[in-house]
Image (cartoon, rainbow, N blue to C red; front, side, top):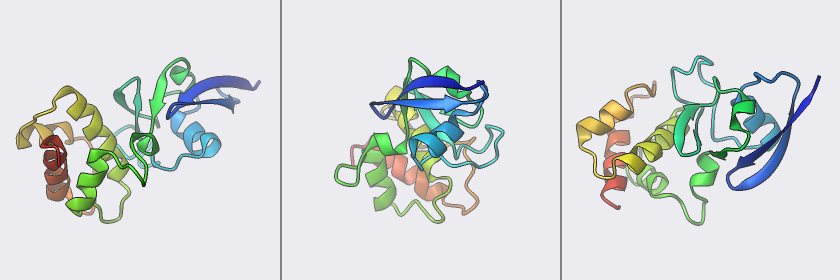
Length: 155
């Protein structure tokens, strides 16, 4: 039996329909809301490619039921900034050339944004620890860390 879910995604009210109340938030975001920032990576909440913010907390949307987002603010990569006014992390990732294939970038930026909200002036070691559970096969970790440090410094 279908169920309608009233969600707020990137500040916009949307209604999603799910047949299964445990359907992952990731599937609803990509297939019904139309955001493409969060990616399906491992499906086990281990790689970070699907990371979004749920009331300001970084969560793995592949393992969060869409029904858990009702009444909460969901922010995706698209909601952090826009092409005209990118978020400081998006700007820093561009400036540091911290992207190769781009698959992990969503998770790196979303995890970093939640981290910097709690730790505005981190050390390099703290950044590495905060991103330790985000997987990048391209090996851009040094540039990602540099981008987060640049964003933390205000640039």
